[in-house]
Length: 389
Ligand SMILES: Cc1ncc(COP(=O)(O)O)c(C=O)c1O
Image (tube, rainbow, N blue to C red; front, side, top):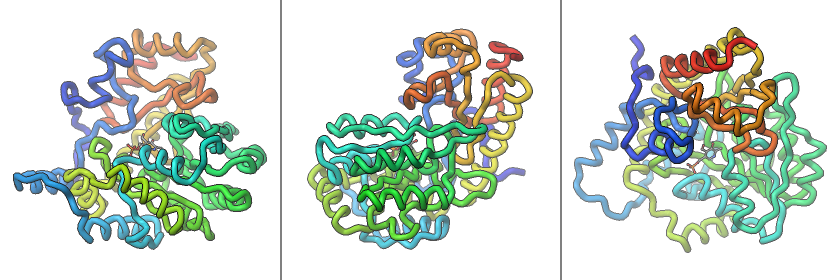
């Protein structure tokens, strides 16, 4: 028997969770199957729940101090899983990775500077650049034979005018797990043009087909100009606990980042976030292995289902993340029309590709981190709505 249960459907309505309780606000109705927001429909690992419940038994929740075991759990996780040896003093705690990206923008660039992102991409990347008065430059990823590739000539031209590059590795929403060669090419260009890199590696633990995540900063001398962002938020379904660990080996970059965190008192953290991160990184590996296997099965089934039943829509096979990127452009309708059909005919809450940038128009992001029965129900509804092309 399978040790962990990923099949039970949990009703999250009324828990104040965005995915279930913001449906009315976002889609105009509440009865949709939710495959949108990037958290998972799976119970948190029992090992993490237990650690949190144990802590709850102590009735005082005062200010926290992160003990050496907390830092060791992060250092060992990064070492054991990604073969990067990180020092304790390189680690800075922030509530979330989006917060960390904004702090990086504020402390490592100047107003008016240009910052490059690879689009389509997780939408808060746009916000982190624009809301701080920096100039956004995009390096659109190219869809070639069903796979997204980097346009290096365009990237070089954009980096030559910029002071920062925000890398999404693995990439949300196109599901690429960048190869060492791709990361090296990016790094060489960033070094050539003196560009600081923010490497958002929040999806690092969910990679498929035996791949291994490569920390960008562990290649060549890239650690010298890189701010690496880690969190158990995605892989252990802890997003609501606001827990992230930012690794900055370069003393100068780290000092200005740390000064900002200090000035805003963003280091305090949350009792349960600290406990959960430590439990995830010390006791969660078995659960994570089972999760990745389950997700890989969901992914493969989803790809086959589209090929058989919805061949008019291409679906990009994700190499990592639990997000699939489906191309609905053959419908030749507007995104508003597409959304209306998905919501009011198919009864699905999915994310429109345009959320992630211009290049996402006509695409839909499907979160397949849910019990198989839910994924099947969602796909059956797509089949009933769009039939065979
Ligand atoms: C690439 C990426 N970065 C960051 C986040 C969110 O991170 P946090 O909740 O720690 O701000 C997400 C969530 O979907 C994401 O996909």
